[in-house]
Structures are given as C-alpha cells and as structure tokens.
Length: 250
Image 1 (cartoon, rainbow, N blue to C red):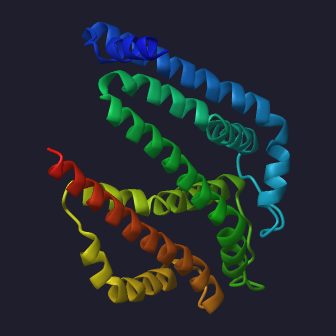
Image 2 (image 1 turned 30 degrees about the horizontal axis):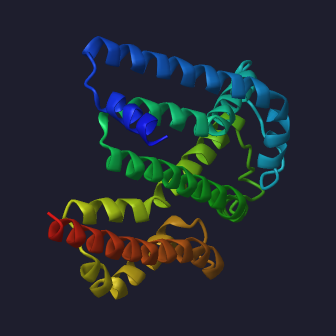
C-alpha cells in the first residue's frame, strides 16, 4: 500500500508539458459546465417554488418585458444549478491544481477548499433566510398611496443575488485573516489590540448596511461578523504557532 502511495505521489510531482496542462484545464472546465447545466436542468421544476418563496416578503412580482419572465426562470435555474453543482466544480478545480502542489500543500489546499465552500454556503444561507426577509419588509414599508411598490422579478433577483453573494464573501473573513497572517501582513496580537475598535466599526457598518434603523436587524448582521472576527483571531494564532514550528524545524 505504501509503495502504491509513493508511486502515485511521484507521478503527481512529475512536471507536465504546457499543452497537456491546457488540455487538462479544458477538460475540467467542460466537466464543470456540463455539471452546472445538468444540475440546472434537474432543479428547473423547482424554480416556480423558489420564486414563490422569494415573493413572500414582497407579495407578487411583475415583469415589464415579453421575455423577462422566461429569462428570469432560466437565470434562476442557472444559479441554483451552479450552487448545487459547486461540490463537483470544486472537485474539478482541486483535481486541476493538485499536480502543481507538494504533498503538504495538497492537504492544506484541499482543506481550504472545503472550508471556503462551507463558509460561503453558511453566509449565503444566513442572508437568504434571515437578512432578506427582514430587510425587504422594512424597505417596502416606505410605500404609500402615491408610492405603490411594483417589484420587477428580474431586478429583485439581481438584488437577492448581490446580497447573497456579498454575505457569502463576508463569511470568508476567517480565511482572509488566516491568509494575511500566513504571508506576514497581520498578527494575532494586532487583532486582539484592535478588538474594541473593530466591535465599534462592525456595529457602524451594520447600521449603515441594514435597511432599517431597528436594533434587531443591526444586531442580526453584527453578531455573525463579531463571531467571524473572533474565529479569525483563533485561526491567526494557530497559523503563527505553525509558522514558528516550521522555522524551528528548518
């Protein structure tokens, strides 16, 4: 078993020609696109259910062009398919870069890939299920007898996609902190010293980004950011200890 493992590692460490590298990239991209298309086709019957779920804070949608409703369904199916196929797409990405990494780097990259997807999924879900319903209801409360909300389905979906994607990126904060610590730009003691200012900054940011002045929606956004910041400090300490260990062992 050990011999087979060493042979596999040796094959992975062998340099490959540029054309072979490009062919491999092309193959992985084709596999990924096919997976997205297949998943989009598979989830298309659920598109109307998702639209009804999206409409709960709004009531009803309107469309202002003959093809808007059709293309909105296609776009929604594509994004649902992309999200559903993301584990396979990440596997293709991992399979492509694996040949260019050392054995230790492969383990780290694989772990980072999984954690990154988990954090992005957590941030997207948090936004979709908690932030959006509260925020949209508050924004629509600004309507009146002369300001009647008529929400276009395409514009609403663009708003939802932007919010979900933004929260997915925000939840990558621990990984971003870990990367900055790894390359020596940031230190854990700096993060601890700046904790008070960070807390104030996060609540100011939450007050600016949340659609309403109510404390509940601001806390709803600020608390996850504070938790992610504390997780980032723990990650920074772990990476620093590992850096010291690597330096001592040469």
